[in-house]
Amino acid sequence: MNVGRFSVMTSLLCLWASTCGAAQTVGQGTLRFTGAIVESGCATNARSGSVMELTGCASVSRGSRLDVRSVEPVASVNAAHVRLVADSGEGRYYDQRYLLVDNAGKPIESGNYVITMTSP
Image: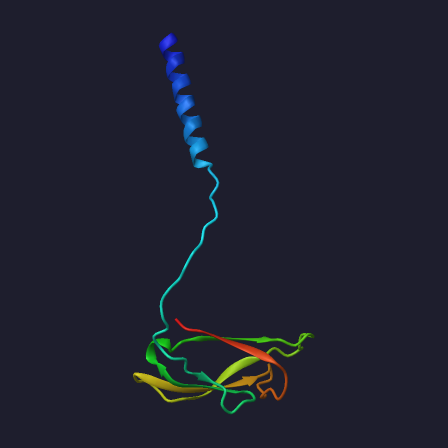
């Protein structure tokens, strides 16, 4: 009987000790990233207005996602989107032209927008 109690008490003590060890809080630390951007940026807004051009982009960035966000203090009723209007085709490098349009598909003439390009 004493051996059984000893075994149960030892098991509970081990279980309690392992639980306390797993519940340790994670301390704060610092992450550092180093490196370089090996491809030059290819997005330009040389014409200004609602046209955005990607010129000389590497083929690995084809399929990038473009998100549009208005920075106006009052939200617009019509959401803005980008529409592809020209594409140079397949190859090592490519060119594309996008137009900023509203829900009706008409070019946006005024406003302040941030276009974020996320490459794969």
